[in-house]
Structure formats: structure tokens, C-alpha cells
Length: 378
Image 1 (tube, rainbow, N blue to C red):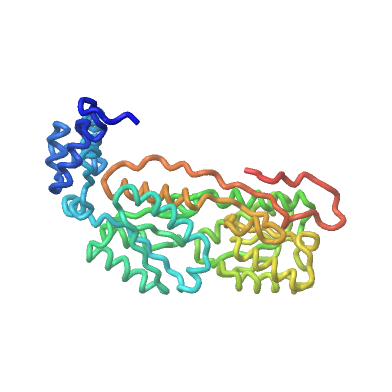
Image 2: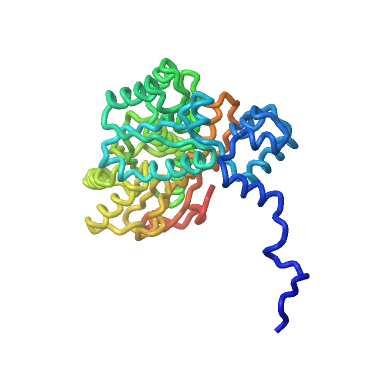
């Protein structure tokens, strides 16, 4: 075996690189923003501007700053950023729901996941409050503002009329409206998707399958998205020359969806198809119909809305309207951060809603085959 020669340099004797020396020195004492500025040959203000996403720093200088920060293993302290910018580095989200209802609504976990994915990389946190009444919701906004706990808020479950935007303006809290495109009111433009297009596509699909008695199970009438989906269903029936079918307004829960389905099927002339305002009610409605001895889709076709993760796995798989709620949450978070930081938000382009045909819809018994759409229809 060849022994190491004293004249031959060993790997451990290799001189440390500039970056490794910098990191070693950094471990011996706490690195400051001044160290990063000195290494990048810029001012401390320039370093601050880069890490607070503010303009005014050239691309070459920005690259030097980011390289220096990486070499020194330095990250801005969130508390220091908040103090220097007089911001809380947090965004608020108040959801007015009873806790039991909140836990069963699949929209909110997906939306919050999208928001958190956008906040995690920029040093912001999400402050979530679940309240069970209007008074508690207003109190939460007042506390946010008076205690400087958040820099801005997300507003969901839009209503017509809705006094919350004016209230938040009075409190000095930036906000983003989260709702259908049709929900614009009072000069405020929401960030949302075209719910109406998805519902219209569902009604056309059912009509192409031979259905003429098409009912609707909606959400609470006070919500804009409930109104938008119901109106789209009624308008598409009218455009197709069909009489408006029966409507039952529910509350987006499975239990309410089942009760509404039984109410529709108890009618002297029951519908042959039902369009639900969300998947949870549709899945419960499917179960209620089967409990009565009906076959889906042979005796009753069912369409949902949302395309929750469970939708492809129920039996039969649920035909539904797909919307990308996670990306929706990301877009809302990016926009609100820009407003909080005094920047012009980038234009929002969300994926269009899609109509996904699965096994819960079929031709009316005795009808002839017709064009009913493919497995995945924009």
C-alpha cells in the first residue's frame, strides 16, 4: 500500500475557499446587514431594498448582494423587517362560519394552502380567525387594525350589498376581495374565476344527454357565488328553451345537500338531473338518491362544483366543474402583499374553470345518443 508522502498535499490541507472562510467567520459572530453591504460593496440601504422587494437597485448590484448574503449565510430578521417597515409581516383572514361547518368545507383548506405557499417564501405569516357571527367578524377586523396585528386582509364569502370593504377602508386595512368575477361592486374588483361559465357548461352537457327537468341545489342566498351559480343555471335553461326547474337553497354542507335532494325527489314530477353548487352537497345527494333505490346516472344525473380531491373516487365518479383553488389562493396572496408594500400588483391570470365529465351523468332513459362532451372539457 502506498503511504502518504509528506510532500503531497492532502485534501484536508487544501486552502479554504473565500465562501467557506466567510461562513466560518460568520459562525464566530452574528452577521449583520453591514457585513453583507461591505462584502457586496453597496450601502446597507441597497441590501434592505433588495430583501424588502423594493426597486432602485440595479441587477448587477442585486446579484452581488444576494451572493454576499449566501456566502455569509445571512437572512433578514423578520422582526427587524417588521420594525423597519412598521409592518406586522402578517396577513389576516376572518372566516365567518360555525367551526363545525368550517371543518367540512373543502374550499378553505385548499385556499389557505395556496395563500401559505405564497407567504412562506417572503417572510409573511397568515393570521386566521374563525368566527360564528357578523358582530364577531367586525370585532376581529377592528382588533386587527387597532392592535396592528396584520397588514392586510382577505375578504371571502362576498355579499350584495357588502359593507365590509368600506369598513376596512375606514380602518386603513388593505384588502383583497375573493369571489367570482361577477361580484364587482362599488368600484372594487374581486380576484376570482368565472363560476357562471362552469355552471352553463354543466347545463348544456345535461341537455345534450336528453335532460329537460334539470334542478338546482344552491348555497346560502346571501353569498354572491351562490347567486352567480343559480343565475347561470337559470339563464342557460332559458337560452336552451327549457322551463326553469325547481330550486332548493341549502348551506354547502353534506347534510343540507341530502335534505335538498330528498325534497326534490319527493316532488310529483321529480327532476332527472340536478346541478349542485358544490361537490360536498352533490356527493351527499348521490348517496340520498341511492338510498331511495335510484341508480346514478341511469335514473338521476348529478353534477357538482369544485372538483374536490374525493370527486374522482366516489361511486360513480362525480361529474363536476373544476377550479384551481390553490392557485387562486396564491394569486390573492401575491396581490395583497403588493398592496401592503405599496407596489402595483401584477395582473392576475387564473386558470379557466373546466368541466370534467365522469360517471355521475348519463342519458335519460330512452333518449337517443347525442353530443354530451368528452372526459375533460374546458
